[in-house]
Amino acid sequence: MKEEIAIGMIGAGGIARVRHIPGLKKLRGVKLAAVANRSLASSKQAAEEFGFERYYENWREVADDPEVEAVFICTPPYMHKEMTSYALSRGKHVFCQARMAMDLEEALLMLEEDRSTSLTTMLCPPPHYMAVDVFVKHLIGDGQLGEVRHVVLQQVTPAYQDPDKPLHWRQTKAIQGINMLEVGMLGEVLNRWFGPLASLSANGATWVKERRTHNDEYGEVELPDSVSLTGEFLSGATLTALFSGSAAISQPFMLIHGSKASLQCHPDEPYVTLFTAEGERRVDIGKSELKGWTVEADFIQAVRNGVKGYPSFKEGTRYMAFTQAVKQSLDEGNGAMKVMNIH
Image 1 (cartoon, one colour):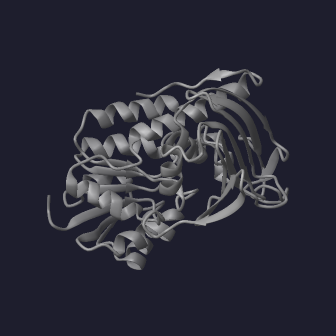
Image 2: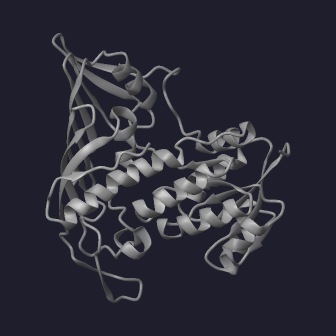
Image 3: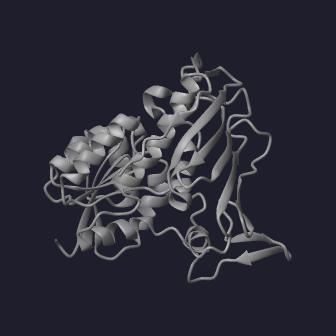
């Protein structure tokens, strides 16, 4: 491994601009070697704006670049499987944006490829509940809540509340696959804190069925505006969850009810509220357990150490199994579906 790790980036919009490129530029021993965006012109613009040494018209050229050691895939899900497979075949380490794949079938194929190589792979974690992640896992693991019995999750926002808002690519199956709302992101958090679900049952609704497209025509909204579900974890704890982009306000939270105490947390707040027989108490997370955004540094460190990154492709396949069960339940009319347990 060279002292300086050369990064190739496929897709330089959205989260790449907000998170990944700034994060990589802060790291020593990392250089931005190559980029490919939607067109040669936009690739050139990204190279000039962020300091990539080379720019390409086709994304395969990034993976083919002999100097590039690690590839950041920052496209929507419909390209993740193909790009990951190609980059690995070219001997490149791979960081892939979430959601992992279009569906569980693709995720399982990606996991199989990952297990056949020693190259470093990593998925982008969700920012939701990142700040309190370490603290909550310790609290549950130490038994301070007692036996976890009920988990209540609410992830509601006004993202799609306005009926005049244009059709977003996240509402299109050909780009997003089965990845609806924040189901997969929060599924990842649920898996990490409570283990996998055994089964679930889901309902979905689409309040605005058509929206304007960039051509000023109208396109079908193919993924639901809201999903509600109930489920049971392998541990025996129950889950009640509401995901919606059609609320008047943004009010996300998670309530964890245990046999000794209950806990409430919010996806962006560095504190939790603990409820016991003695009353309600706010607990601010100490610096030693407060988790910040270190995603790019975590991936680079995994590459240097020659190990898989976290979240791993295995963790990704687990949340894709969760999302696939939600999709299957919606398709079959609110039937209870088993969630595949990924080992």
